[in-house]
Structures are given as C-alpha cells and as structure tokens.
Length: 181
Image (cartoon, rainbow, N blue to C red; front, side, top):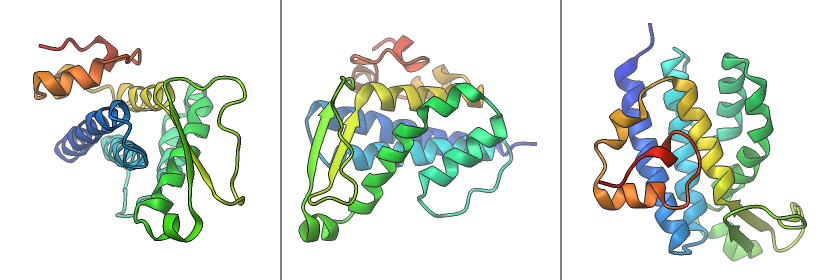
C-alpha cells in the first residue's frame, strides 16, 4: 500500500517549488529559476515514487529518479520528456556559485524551444544552461498525472497569487485548467 501521506507532502512541496519556479521564470531570475524547477521536479518524482511504494533516498539526482519513475510506470510517452530532465539536472551542478565563479556560464530561458535554440555546449567554456518553460510544464504535468492524485486537492491550498503564476501561459494538464480564484 502506498504511503499516501508522505507522497502528498512531497507533491505539495513540489507544487510550491513549481509555482516559485514559474514566478522566477517570469521575473527572469536565472539561474534561480533552474534551481527552483530542479527542486520541483525532484520532489514531484520522489512523491510519485513514494506513491508507487518505491524507496527514494536522500540524494538529488533527478535523472536517476526519472529512470526509476518511468520504469515503474512503463509508459513510453514519458520517454520523450527525458531530454528535459537531463537539461534540468545540469542546474544541480550550479546550485552553489563555486562552479559559476570557476567556469562562468551562459544561459537561455524561453517559453518554447525553437529550431536552432539550445545548442549543446557541455564541456565547452563557459557552459550553457537552457530552460524552456513549456517543457518544464509538460514534465511536471506528466509526473503529476501519473500519480493519479487529484490536482484540485493540491491547488485548492494555493493563494490567488500562486494560482496566477501556476496558470499563466501554462498549457500543461492538469495545472493549465486550474482557475485563479
């Protein structure tokens, strides 16, 4: 039997980080936006794994959590979102400023990836960190939908201001359907 209370708490925290990340995106607070979204996806994946009665551990490797989550669900539709997880996980390496101070960084934030955007620069100096809101929304929505928990339960606890940032230019189900009260 899944540990629903732990799963609910993790997903509640995930939703709060997600809203904070969306606010950071609109405020153009980079790289903080990437950090907030990394936390959101980490907590969402941990909540999903606990809901599936899986052990989660205390590390922050969302690539590992993603592999375990998608393997447990055996849903090929989730495979197409793996590139977003890989790009977002890179933000974990700049959680603290040491790496940015040592190697510098370039970044690109946008609503939607366009052809030719987000050229891979891993291993080159300075490293580039890209983030596309539409992709983050798709991943977060997919994780939440996979839990089969009612999103209204979680969004009902949000303030009107939080719901505004949750829904602003968000086409991802289930959160794009949430109405700002």
